[in-house]
Length: 241
Image 1 (cartoon, rainbow, N blue to C red):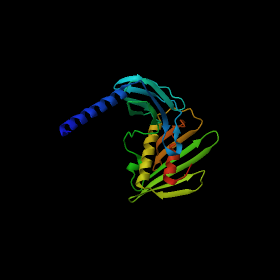
Image 2 (cartoon, helix red, strand yellow):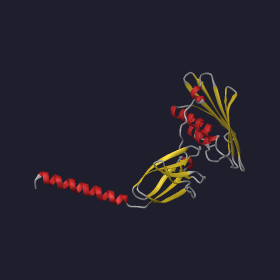
Image 3 (cartoon, rainbow, N blue to C red):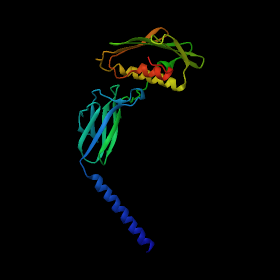
Image 4 (tube, rainbow, N blue to C red):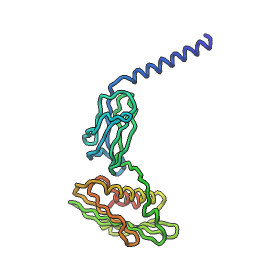
């Protein structure tokens, strides 16, 4: 068979294949099933908190205030197309997840502990020798009471952190790596954001940042949604408070 004929047949076949796929994908309605989850390994699982969740198509709201049950949600009756799932995270920030709906989506996951960096300076970012930054932490609840602190100081070009907890009753000291410093910076930025959350939990966490003995930032967290100090001490010292 002549090469030009073969080429024409191949092109027509490809066109038919694309059209066939397009037609099959255009049928609906489709359903989205998903979960709001905490992706942090130490607390991984469905997020049971009451969070705002909406579905948009372009600038139009398709479904507002999608109901969740134990962190799971279902949105039926959707046409094919691109959608934006908008939800609030642990820090009351609005996050977006783009979804291309050409068939039923069975397991859409939204990490509610994802964080949008608001920028800005941090205490450790401005530290210079011989500054001392101290983070005091106290947590009280029905069945526990703990006090702890992390002290950070700069010696020449090295940043050193010391940790003490009423549970451990011993001081642990280490030189902070680049990854450690990034964890401290992230913690402070999340702490500043967490103060905007509503409380209501029986466990209350108190945070007090001091710089050279002067109180610089005080936050009370009774949301039971973050556990930031626990995550930080696990990262820096491998210790559970």
